[in-house]
Length: 125
Image (cartoon, rainbow, N blue to C red):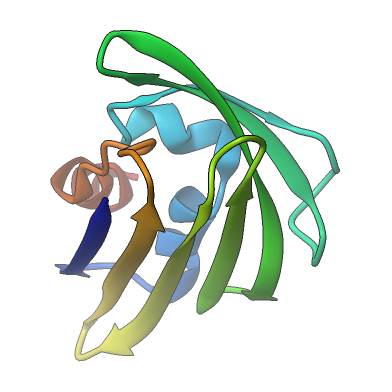
């Protein structure tokens, strides 16, 4: 599965990253993620989150580890825990808003990204 999407959101990068980078809020804008349990407090290089996603009617356990983090602009997570791949979030100022960019590669769709829902969450905050 490969996912590439850019979306213009009428908000500052920090407001977008505050939701987009927070693993506890993933279920609010990702349809496949059922649970996200941080194993390390905060977002730091090496921090791990254990997750469960619903994929084709089955629960799939997986995890991520933070490889790159520059708040509020970049977060790259390597996927592990029995799965392989990565996800990268980029947020950059654009005019009066910001462009949020998601790039993900994995064997299965572990995320169910709904960028329109992310946009509504951020703009409604």
